[in-house]
Image 1 (tube, rainbow, N blue to C red):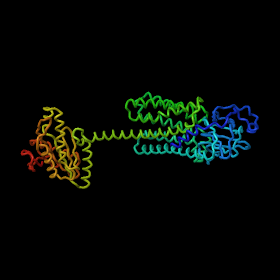
Image 2: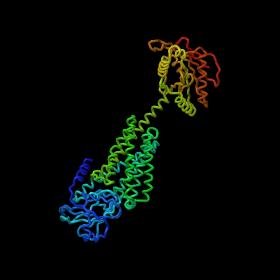
Image 3: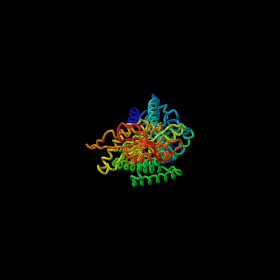
Image 4: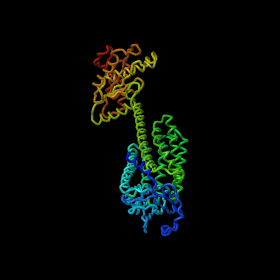
Length: 563
């Protein structure tokens, strides 16, 4: 990049070696070369050929000083884009035809310039005549370079253009991959924007000559390149609208971009029917309005702390300056320095890179928000237990696996005895602390693969995979003992708390709903029997049998029964 920058500085600072003049007519070559129109040529300031008319015109380059043949000098017309040139050197009867694309292209040199050898050099005052057919209204700077310098500058030019076009192509492919992978429509518009920009730069810059049929099509008709440029701006405006969510957040900016897109679509239709030179500056004017609108929307959104707006403002700020400079040159207000021919494509590539990073950051933020929302939907914020919907979903999967593998599965329903009294007497803050402590004590008595979910209020569901009823009764008894073994200390007060628990084992072919009904019935049987106890349900319907004590080491009045 430093070498490329050095090249820009060097090429823009070259001394003027020609007097440039222009003939506002297109006589036959014999008349021009014979000197008949010598006095009709009008002097042009500077050292550039800037032809704005599509009608062929004659230009004359007169050497201010001698050009020696020792260094293999070459006449160099930099950045010709779609212009075609016929060149008569001193002594030539047949012109050399040069263009970036098509049959007149010279693959020996890069697309940086049209290169015409001057094997005999030039004497002071000798003239070179050029007949220019301008398909793009851009200035071609004129210079003389030794062959070694031409090749050196060509290598730098190819490296820089490869970087720009390669960056745009890779970013476009990445955007397509993200679009296909996650289905986010914003990436589709970004991909279309980047691809259109790459095709536009390759069209006007001549890189398309690597594909013969495409080079022939574009070299013969500048409308193809303009079409890519216009499509790129339409896609860019659509991307901005989605990326910044303009329809909801800033509808006024959205209306301006809608108007710009409508104008661009009209220009697209006009481009199909004409190659007039007013199209580029009108298109660039609309592009400028779009860029200013985008930047303004980005600044407003950034002021409102919209994170993605920072990336948008960073990518568009330099583009506004570059578009202004280019528009001013097209309107004839000034002549841009030569580095502008590199700054614009580099600006497009860097803008695309910043936007890709910004959109990726936006997607990551959306994923973080989604994960946070998913966690809120999966875990209870108060107790850290699974929510009712989450534990029901996992219980369904475990029950299906248990049926399929003929493996046992049991569930435990429990709630806190007289929990409403705690809330009514001491307030909801104490009630919430009671729930947290009970959840912590009971969850710590479970295995890592057991499920613990808050089913509603103070009611908790525990799912025990690979556990038969009798083992589940022991687990439930352990949960009961974990709570009533010692009082709960909340706000410097002690609260005696107990649990009522109901246990049921899944029968083969039984639905989850029926299993939960039996566990719930066992829970209510525990409450009816005096609370602070465990009841197991084994039958397909509720029927009470004699209580069967199970180990009770934590509380003298707690019992376990099988119902």
